[in-house]
Length: 139
Image (tube, rainbow, N blue to C red; front, top):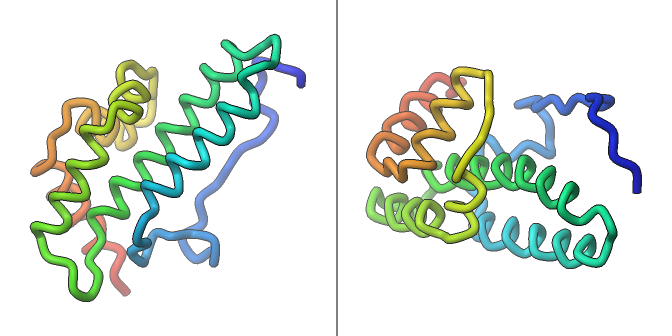
C-alpha cells in the first residue's frame, strides 16, 4: 500500500451509466453500504498505515451515505412519505453516519449544503432538497 497526497484519479458520476443508482430506488442500499464499509475497515485494520487509510475511507463513507440519503428520498411503488422519513431518519441518526459527517472540508457549494443538512439531521430540509432535485431530473 502506498499513500500519496496527489489526486491521480478523478471519479465522475454519469447519470446515464448503468451503474448509477440515481434514477431508481434501491431497497437495503444503506445496509449494503454499511456492510461494505465494515469489510474495508476489517481489511485495513492490521496495516501499519491504518490511521491514514481510515481517514481517507471516511471521505468515501460520506459519499456512500450521501448516496443512501438520496436513495431514501426516492419514490418507489408502495413507498409512502412516512416510509421515506423513517428510512431517512434511520440513516441520519446512525452512529457511523454521525461520525462520518462530524467534520468535513468541502469546497463544492451543493455538496457542502447536502453534507451540512446530513450533519444537522435536517430530515424535512433533506426531503425538500431531493424532491426539488429529482423533479428536475425527470425526462
